[in-house]
Amino acid sequence: MTTPTFRGIVPPILTPLTPDGEVDTASLERLTRHLVAAGVHGVFVLGSTGEVAYLTDAQREQVVRTVVRAVDGRVPVMAGAIDLTTARVAGQARALAAAGADAVVATVPVYAINDYPEIERHLRTVAAAVDVPLFAYDVPVRVRTKLPVDLLVRLGREGVLAGVKDSSGDDVAFRRLVLANAAAGSPLALFTGHELVVDGMLLLGADGVVPGLANVDAAAYVRLWDLAQAGKWEDARDEQDRIAALFEIVFQAAGRSGDAAGVGAFKVAVQRQGLIDTDTLAYPLEALDGEVAGRIEQITRAAGLLGD
Image (cartoon, rainbow, N blue to C red):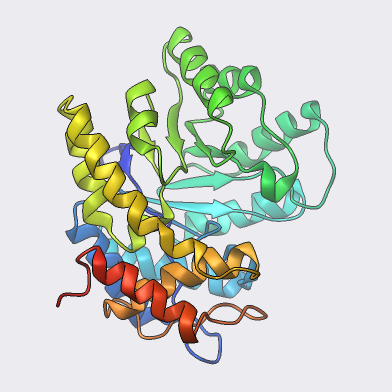
């Protein structure tokens, strides 16, 4: 068995739901196959875009098994282990690996309040619980804690961490991480969760990108990646500008929660493309509709994703 390579465009895949809130496995398979056909280099399940916090343990396992089956070994599957304490995150990680995930992406605990030595022990414990690579999921908006550069690089050098998914939005810290990682011999694969400055992140040395908007237009991100790899930075900037125009869909639902406005917009745009059956959001979120959904559809159409 070959060791997966973690790099490139890795969409954090949506979790399509039926109107009664169950995982729509047929839509999930269809969306997964579409992303792989568009040329993505991996998929990430059970992240914020996948509404992981709203899913039961059984649903999480169902999502992983469904995506692994649809991918059929063509690209690696990364899966998020997000829970309250170290023991629960480690348990999630073991379940994800058993379900076929090629790598686990773990946050620090999301309820327990831990200091940095405790967080280091947490990451070491989760890594020891699985026999697949572990990525640290740096998402302080969700867990209150920003992971320090020196901690991440040290755990990378020691082989505890294979990489980092940086969703902090802290570009200064990410650049410091890229530089420190390079100085240490690049033990970590570094992914940014950015949507709108992917060209800049690739220019400064990111190994990959995990953009939620890739659910809506994976091909654009793949084009952007290819242009960056070819050193065609002006063309990459133009592609990024086109992506930025499409990203306006997430700003249409004023006054709604971040989960509803962002994931809800992605689901409307993806449903209108016929890639999932409904734009249902996990309870208690309500799907975007009416004028808001109409504006999202117009922006998606203007991007050339809905035909004439």
